[in-house]
Image (tube, rainbow, N blue to C red):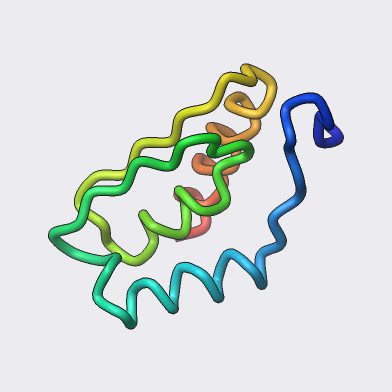
Length: 82
């Protein structure tokens, strides 16, 4: 679905996600031994990115059940591609 303005949602591109996650990993803030809580995870792009750099635990939280449904599907799709 389209972002819901009333929930201050916006699209996070794959390029932006990769840039943020890789910067945080290279800075030592993400990776093995790290726990991530993604508040307002939306469709799960950042949460999935954190899981892909081997964070020990990643928890995505959102108040929008539609976004969480998409996040779960996105995570399943990524796991199938690995």
